[in-house]
Structure formats: C-alpha cells, structure tokens
Length: 257
Length: 167
Image 1 (cartoon, helix red, strand yellow):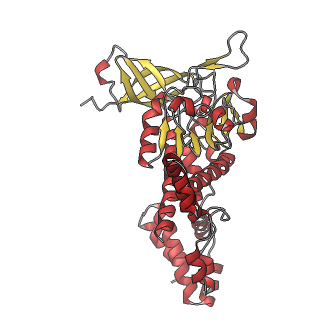
Image 2 (cartoon, rainbow over the protein chains, first blue to last red):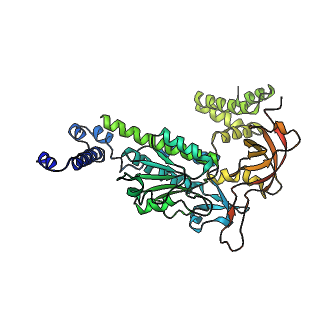
Image 3 (tube, rainbow over the protein chains, first blue to last red):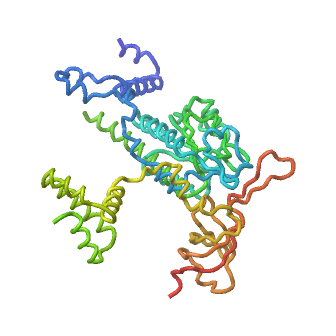
C-alpha cells in the first residue's frame, strides 16, 4: 500500500517522505518504551533498571557537575554596578557591596542545574544545539567548546532573520537549532542579541547567562551570573559541554542496545 | 597509664599542634575500645589543659559548612571594603605594544600603560602591584536611564612583585 503511494509521487517528494519517516522512527525509538525491554521484564530488578528519562529529576546526574564553591571561585557572583541594573534581575541579586551587585549563588545554582538538565535531555534526544556569544575575547573558547561536543556555535555578527527568514537566507528549508545557549545575551552594552527574540518567535528554547544589566524575560532557562570574566565563561562552557556529552553518551548506549 | 599522662609526654616532645589533635583522637578511640569502665575513669580524671585539648581536637573533626553567605563574608572582596585607593596584586595576562592587561581577581581586568622604569620586565605572567581607583568604569550620561560601562577597571600601576623576565 505504502509502495503504491510512493511510486505515484515525484522522486523529490518520495525522498522527503522516506527521510521524514526515517526521522520519525529514529526519534520514536528513544522517546517511547522500547519493545525489547518490555518482553524481558520478569523480575523487580528489571523494572528498576528501566527509568523514563523524562520522569527522572536528574537522569544524567548533571547536578554533580559543579558546587557553589566552584561557582564562587570562578567569580560567577560578581555583577555590574547598581546604575546599570535591569529591574527584572532584582530577584536574583543577593545584595550590593559598595554599589557593586552580588548574585545569590544559591539561586544561580538552582537555575544552572535546571539549564544543564534540560541541555542534557536535548542532547539525549538528538537535538541540534547552538552556542551564541558576542564577547570577542571569548569567541575562540566558545567555538572550541562547540567543536569538542560536536555541536554548533555562532560568535560573529548576527544577520537579522537567520531563524525567522531562514528559507530566504539559506535558500532552502533548513532545520533550525533545537536549543540556543547564550554565553552572553547582549551585543554590546546597549542592545540585546537579536537571536534571543528570534528564538522566542520560532519556539526554540533558549538557555542564557544573564548578567545584572541583561533582560532575562525572553529566555526559557535564564542563568543569573557573571558573563564578563573569562574564567566564569570557561566554567559555563565546560559545564554545558559535559552535560551535552553525557546526554549523547546515554543516547549512544540506548541505540546500541 | 592514663590519657592525661600520655598527652603531657607528647607535649614535651614539641611536636606541631596538628599532630597533638590527631594523637588525642587516636588515643581517645584506643581507650574507648579497651573497656567501658576504663574509659569512664580516664574521662573523669581529665581536667584543665588536657580536657580543653580534647575538646579542641573534637571540634576540629566537624567540617565547616560552606554556604554562599559564609564564602562571601570571608572573601577578599568584602575585606577590601571601599575599593578606592586599595592596593591589590594582579597578573599581566595580555600585552598589546605598551598596554598591559592585568587581571587582579575581580570581574574586570584593568589596562595600564607600560612604565618607563624597568619596562622590559613587564611580560605575560608577571605579578604587579596596583592601586585601585575604580572597580568598574561606568557612569550615567545626561539624558540616559542606565549607566554606560566600559567593562574595565581603573588602576594605577605601582610596581612589579615578581617577573619571569627578571633573572
């Protein structure tokens, strides 16, 4: 029946449909319970070893990747001066010392855990992850991080419409990223990165490091913290890379079984 | 031999304080496993310095909980107080001709011009002494709602502490 339908269509549509059905079956293999395990379920130990990753609070154990001391040593708690505070960042601030704002690392740690868990899940499901940063000093670090975890990075000038007008810019239907990770959400001190707005418009979830002068509203998983010091950005890169690699490791393990 | 005698003989050997505590703990455990009656006797006999030494060694066993609030309270940043005119130590991490980019453990770096005196010793990795003028160069301009930051600190270079170029 399916063969008859395929033959009646043009060759281009046929390849598209076969690719689409392959993609669906590949994704469904991971998001639903595999049949092999269901048959093998005999004892209670088998039921325990099978966990639905989405129901587990920390399936990839990303909560163990960092401690509050690590964040403190990487200077994640330092913010800008009070004069450049964005009012939406007030809930994340511990206080100010001589007009310099300090982030509450307990709140930051909570947000960072959620962000890392989400990133690991996206990587587990085979999603495309895009690292975005407009900090010229850390552009190379961000690009090498993306290279190490075999994902993508964009640290140059962002042409408007890359997500919203992708058909026109790239000339063909493009697969957009499934997650955008912003290492800093500002282009310069005055303007927010266009990709934050575009990702929100295209329903692409975004994880972003927001400093005291940034707007956290359009991000799905904002992580309040320092985005100016090289050691802080290196820590974030290391954590996200580790989370992605863990997600991919589990994916490969499940595919092999 | 009671616990008290053992502690006093150790003291006479002039061993460092950390070893005292470890020895006290060891001895305490040893005596507790020997017999209950003996343990009761030895604890009753302790008084004065021996008692306080045991108490001190016991309190060292419990680790200090590192909350963010305690980390911040004990940090160098809080010790600084008002940053203006404070002396800090930094490391040169980047050089562009005569501009030295110095990192002193704060959110931002500072950029200082190379001094005329001992100019060749200011290389990457050299530690220098700085006097902080402003931790962040930001100010509000007329008509603006928010401050404009230069993402840089402002410090005066005082001198070299240690340089890899100096042999």
